[in-house]
Every structure is written in structure tokens, then in C-alpha cells.
Amino acid sequence: MMLILYSILISKPFKFIVGPEKQEFTLHAEVISRLSTSLNTLINGGMKEAAEGVAVWEDIDAETFIRLSKFAYTGDYDPPRAALGCQQQLGEGCRRRGKPWKRRAFLPEGLYRRLYRWHQQRVGERRMGMGA
Image 1 (cartoon, rainbow, N blue to C red):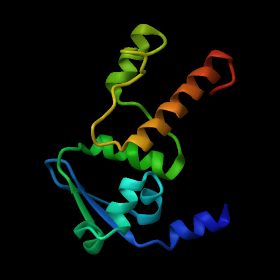
Image 2 (cartoon, rainbow, N blue to C red):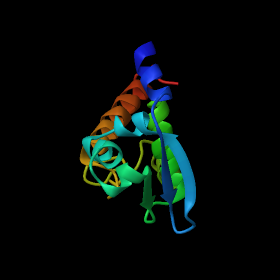
Image 3 (cartoon, rainbow, N blue to C red):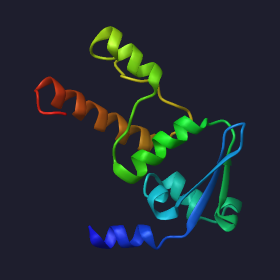
């Protein structure tokens, strides 16, 4: 665990320019690159973004990026407010085609699957009275 934390803390800073407002976020490159092979390629590959240490994601709003960042650093994911409202109305969450939330196009497939499995596990723990 200490070695992973060390590798994150010494990793280069990587800047994301997010949303139409062009809000800047600087994160540890290592923590984001661990989320998926696509993000690893973006940060450490031969792309222009990797060379400059900057990625521009104009089609993602700041709130969504903050949720992704929180998941990258802590492993905890907060669903969007709209999904929370739906969960409160339905009790068990929004279910369309068996999925608790709609997949966002910007999430790499592997990351989406990890978030989905984590969500399913948390729902199961809550039903069994184990979750907080």
C-alpha cells in the first residue's frame, strides 16, 4: 500500500481543462492513469496530451469530473444528483434495462464496469444491512 501511495505522490502533475468554462484541475498522473488503459494512454502514451501534460475535455462538466476524480483518489463514487433524486423516488434506484444509472459516453468501458460492479456491491450491502 505504501509503495502505491508513494508512486502516486511522486507522479507528475497532469492538468485537465474541463467544460465550456475551461475550468482547470491538476491531478496526480498516476492516480488517473490507473483507472483504465485509455486514460493511461492519454497520460503516458505518445499522444500530444501526454507530451504537454494537459487534456481538454470540453464536453464534460466540472461536477462530473470532480466525481471521477474522487473515485480515482478514494475508490468512492457519488452518483449525479439526478440519479439520487430518482433513487429517493423509487427506493432502489433508477433501473433502465437493468442498469442503475445511464452510462456516460466519456467513461472508458473498463472504468464503467468497475463503477457498475462497485455500485452493485454497495446496493447488496445496504439490502443486507451491512453498508453505511
